[in-house]
Length: 342
Ligand code: MRU
Image (cartoon, rainbow, N blue to C red; front, side):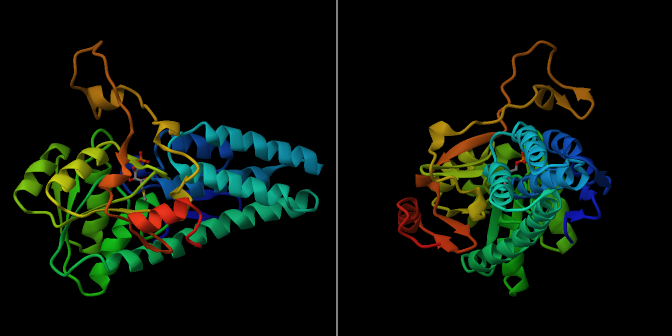
């Protein structure tokens, strides 16, 4: 099941803010609507917001009434700027925008040709995402043993991508290949992607999953209930993995308990020109912490710190699983030096 579709100038996607209580598909008809859906986290997950951004530009291209190449390109640039301002941390968003911009600017032709090129490139990126995630699943499944219990955080599943997911693709493929894998999913405060989305996806697939609160991770590891950790990533830089807030805590605990800590992510999440000090960590509204649903749980006026992501130093990562294979520290270092051909 794909999470996003393009139908004649309309982008159709699941409203993730309503899951798991309601599965409602929303129709996005302009780049403004796409940008709003990303900002409000109706769509979320690094690979998916990358593809959505590409489709946002495709909507601008589709509806453009520009009469000249110059005006058309200016409209695309304006939409690109709007999309860049939605969420600052996930590399895929910026990667997707740059890929479309490079393609359209380097192509010859008038408005009709360019319009076609943008839409086609966005569709290609959606298709590629599915293929890439299948590969991540195939490579990563080799790391899992029959009988493993894998802890995951946030939602790096089908809902965070066009299909399959990244971390959950690894688990899915291992299960498809006959391994008996159980999952422990953290609820992932404050937006509860684990409780609302990961659990929903895995239960639909018939993969055994147990939900815990974020502060139970130490205890389940202490009790020997976890063999491996697999999470996704929003950005992978030279010295760290940036992922949903809470990932760093899990990585440190995994290290302490000698539990392998794997990160599954496509190459579009890699930003190897940057290091952790260059990364902008998104800070979101205090309401996400002071309220649960409509109910306020903290006294009015309390100071709140609400970073959406954290930074896990690369030393804590046992390996990164991408579409080209499994990167241990040595291979990752060679990739940074540009010596590993990909
Ligand atoms: O704030 P979100 O829900 O967009 O954060 C998502 C995550 O942190 C995921 O783990 C990450 O994007 C990987 S998704 C394949």
